[in-house]
Structure formats: C-alpha cells, structure tokens
Length: 353
Length: 155
Image (tube, rainbow over all chains, first blue to last red):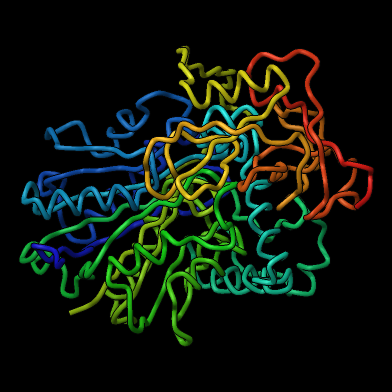
C-alpha cells in the first residue's frame, strides 16, 4: 500500500563517533548533533511537530533516561514527543507513522548512547528473555559467535571472507571523518590475529562507541521548503524473527527479506548502508536484501567502523539520505537492526526527485 | 564539536547498582519446565507441526496457537553451534573458559542455549555429544543445569 503522504529526510547531523565521550553526559554529547541538524535547514525546535528518540536506559544507568536527554532539545517551547528503547531507526518509523496519520508535518528523530561507562557485551545480555537466556549472562560477542559458527559450518561464509568484510568497511571509513575506526590492516594481517571468542576475531566485531545521530523528517511541501533535494522515503517496514535462538536457522534472517518486500526494496540501488555489528552478519543482510552487484555497500564504513548502540541503525538511514541530498546517489536502501543476532530488522528505501 | 572534555582525573566516579525489584510468575509452560529441572527432568512441548520445542514455549512459533502437550526429552544431546568464552564476566554459570553452545537434546527438535565445560576450544566441535551436569542445589532455574559436559570425552 502506498503511503498517504510523501515524507523525506531533509537534514541529518551526527556526533563524532568515538570510543569514549569522556566528561560528557548523553545530553551534552547529542545536543550539538540536534542543533546542527536544525541549523542545516535554518529551522528551530518550534518548527518541529513531533520529536522521537531511541536510546537505552540500561546503558544510561537510569530509568526514563531519555527524559533527561530532552534537555538537548530545549526546555521551551513544549514539544510533542515519544521514545523507543530501540535503535533510533524505529524512532524514525514512529515519526513517519505520526506524519502519515496527519498528526505532524515535521519531526526530529535522534538515536544515541554512551556504551563506554559499562561492559557493553554484558549489558546487552539484558535484552534476552529472563528465564532461558538471561540467567546464563551470554554476552553479545559469544552469542554472535554461535551465528558465525553456524554459517562457517554451513559453508555460508569463510573466515577469510569475514576478514575481507572488515577490511572493506574500515577502509571505506578512512574517508569518513566521523568514523571511529578509519583504515584497516590487510586481510592477511587480520587473519593472523587471535580469536576473541572463537570463531570471532576482534575485527569481526563492531567497536564500542559513544555517539549519536539526529535526522529531520518533513512531509510534502514542508520538505521542499527545507531542502532543494529531499531524500524521499519511498518505503519503510520492520519485521521480527523469533527470539528463540535455538529454533532459528541462524544463517538466515527472513524478517529482513520480508521487510524489504514490504518496503518495496527491489530493483537496483546506487548505495546501500546495512547495519551489521559483526562481519558475518553483513553477508546475511546483503543476501536477504538481494542486493545486486554494483551497489556501493557501506561507503561510510558501516557499524564495523562506528557502532553507537541505539544510533547505528538510524545512522545508516542518515548516511544514505545525505548522499541522495548531496546528489551523489539517486536511490538507496538503508537497513537497521535491533536486538541480538539480527532479530529485528528495518528496511528503508530512499530516493531523490 | 567544540566540546571541552575534562581530563579523566577531574571526573567524579561512583558505583551505581541498578535493580528492578519485582517478582514474576512463570506460568504453566515455563513454570513446568523450571520445576522439572529441579527434579532433574527436562520438558519440551509439542508444536502444531508435531515437532518438540525445548525449552518449551507457550505459543506455537509458526501458527501462534497456545501449546499444552508437555513432552519429556533426554538429558543428553548434540551441539548444533558453539563459540568460545575465554574470560570471566560476572554472573556466568561456570568459571571461564567454556563454550557457549546450542544443544539439541535427544527427543527435541530445537536447541537449548547453555554452556559446555570443555576445557579448551580444541575439545569441542559442532556435532559433539554432551550431557547435563546437574547443579547440587536446584531451585527451579535454567542454572539448575550447571553446564553440559562432553560424553566420552571424544571430539
């Protein structure tokens, strides 16, 4: 079903993505990105109809932490806002629905976290069910290792191919001033490094990142007023696979293919940004999306070069939109994931005029 | 971004303990499974397609219909995937190193997440046979299974 209203990304801005934003609160860290996203289109918060953020109380160490972070938007004027305890890409989806429903014409969306203060792989165990998985404290890297092993056993990928994925992403990130890991050792050198969680080596895992990204959406003429070249959202959909890891075929993520189908992500794309925090997961995402040869994949370096939890998915949308608005891409697809082992997936198709 | 980060020695640090102090009822399916573990029995549940899901789920993964037929499965099984956990983290069920693994118990059609006390990554492989090592004191928790251990030591 075609959306009722044309909605576009009209501005994006991100923080520097770095290992630790020491001395900054989440609010202080994300505020400059929100300000920059508004400044790029010469807008103020009073021009925004709806504000929605994605962040994690477990990383902030405080219940309803997003309420504190709203200080970054400003105490005045009063705003209509919401929040998801998910990646900011899902906050963008909520804002998109809000605009489709006619309850707003414009929206500010942001996603962010500071993962540096805690032990991220351990904190992420709290995403799991509390009866069968949670009491085992299975850290996110070891869990991803189960998926990588399943792919290696099935012949769906090799350790060399995994290293090549890390190499390609981090080499691309050399041109991205916001990326955390810019440039890469050779594939041969990467393969000579020890396992951190056999079968995963350090380069197979996304870095731990503090950072965030802000995106402004606008409908119809509002978008045209703010941008000479809006990145129109032609389709967006999100789907979920079972949280029962032992009942899934871990070499696949059918929810990506389903979301892509519902979002109309067929045909060719100039650019694709996919959210794969582990090298082997990029293979799954690309296969499920059915990306054609020749698509420029993760020109930003992707999550393997900078992975602000709760922001890295929204960042994929921002990177595609930025290239469309800059005129270096005509049509692109962005993918975001939330949860463990590609459990939840969102696909967004963006296009210039 | 024009922000001035303070030097680390100027920062104040304090421990923070997060607690969500509420109790949950585990219900007729998860509760039956956990009670079974206390008695050294492992229960799965029969899905709409006849396959046995273990650990059991309340609703069929495909059709969504409520499931009720509990089925006892074995205490030995086969590793379907694994990764190596080299270092200790608070809360882990046994001291590291060990393998995090998916184990399909005999009589079940899906795999259970747990850990295998294998000693070294060279001593564990997909397809290996493992059996449950029960905890001495059991309280109705997934950690009533202390861990899995290799059967016969072969790999």
